[in-house]
Amino acid sequence: MEHATVIVIGGGATGVGILRDLSMRGVDTLLVEKADLVNGASSRYHGLLHSGGRYAVKDQEAARECIEENKILRKIGRSCVEPYGGMFVRLNSDPEDFEAAWVEGCKVSGIDAKPISLDEAFRIEPRLSKNVVSAYLVPDAAVDGFRLSWQNVDSARRYGGRVKTYEEVIGVITKNGKVQGIRTRNAFTGIVTKYSCDILVNVAGGWAGKVAALAGLDVRVQPDKGTLIAFNQRICNHIVNRLHKSSDGDIFVPHGSITILGTTSMSVDDAEDTSSSREEVESLLAIGEQTFEHLRDYRILRCFAGSRPLYIPPGGAVGRSASRGFAIVDHGEQDGLEGMFTMVGGKFTTYRLMAEKLSDAVCKKLGNTMPCRTAEEPLVPEVPEEERKEARSYFPSYGTDLAATRLGPDRFKSVVRRLKQDPEKRELVCECENVTRAEVEEIANEPSVHQLSDIRRRTRVGMGTCQANFCALRSASIFADCRKGRQDDAAQDSLAQMKELLEGRWKGIRPVLLGRTIREMEMTRGMYELLFHVNGGATK
Image 1: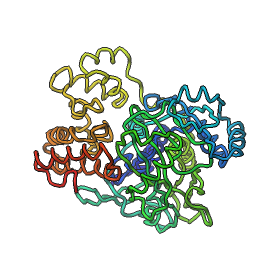
Image 2: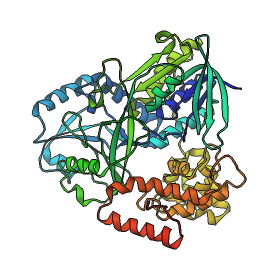
Image 3: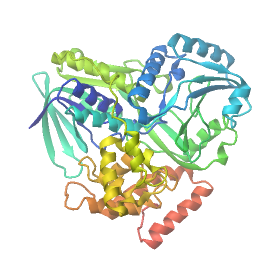
Image 4: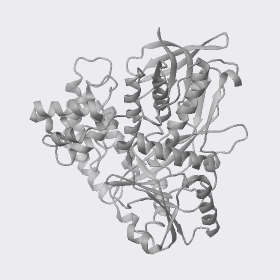
């Protein structure tokens, strides 16, 4: 039976943050995740690195946590953060008294909220509605949840941290009131494996209640679904927030060449429910066009949804009234099961702080006095400029810096070697995201990658303008070639892999079939059904 001092259940941002923190303190730590890493709420949100302004009135403690972690993540995860800055705008339909309370809340929370004139607001955000009556600048930023989480894993591995994906926890082993380990089932082989541990950490997000139940414990977690819309243009230059009580559809977040509008709040029974409807899309558009009046003129790329894991204490509120803070439950103290912790709630911006607090509690149990260093040490070293300069001879235009931030220094060097040795590796598999064949091959050969969608989350293949229209066939073929001889995953069925990628894109496109999007989907259907005879690839 494989042993780890600490086993972490859940491969979202908090889970990988704990893996990194404990590994840096010298604790033998294993993380298990039932699917690919960053497959839940940590990748299904608007990508906002909060300044805390969102919580300045309702929850000033959360606001203070956000602004402090905002500063830390800009430092340790520079390649993951786009420091656009934020703008809060009040429309003439928004309550005036909320603005005064918000200004005071920002001051108390330590958030630099700078008032600007309307002339300045319209100069830097010319598409804003003329119904804006006041505006403030705050230090919001955008963050890539996929990249930041994987960089946490890369950092943890340098300190001995281990990760096993596609291993679903199906049982918690206990004896005499103490945790002994877990049982997992592999998603591809069905093989059941036992792992022993001294301490078990449950950070399974929306599934934390189900994991706790495996140990006979009751943890109330309410999955709260939020739907978002991705536009294929940069609508704004800053993160734009409505200056009113938090509500649906009041945040616009630019990422690279796109903009994300979010989000809704809807309690659901199951965290697996990531569906989106046309009604939700129309509701978001109606609210969003109050801030940007010509919103419907922009092309919608897709919509998507994720479930926030809101912790509901006895008698606690649900939905937007529930706290966005986090809670740590020591089941030894609360339920008499020694050696198990559950942490629920929180937000992506504070994942590192959450990991630090949980790791402090674990290390206290272990007698480990090593201090937390995750706020000081960068996640990964940056690729030196001299290496980037040399690599520009082999990468496509604008592709070098994108690949350097996606890959990190070690993988970047390996990809450059591939490009040098074989010019055919310079072929673009995904034109939208500038992903070369060499990069797809590099990621495809990693042990943690089992499906084509795993490569998508690591490289952004299929996530650009064409939504896998052209790159699905190419990447599926390359993936199958790279995985010949491996029997532990589904990579050999390249047709099934391609269909799965296309179906994933179709799920987000179907609720936004409007105008040009309908024409483009007809082109996709024509290519894959009529030319390649792939029935159901993007149309069922």
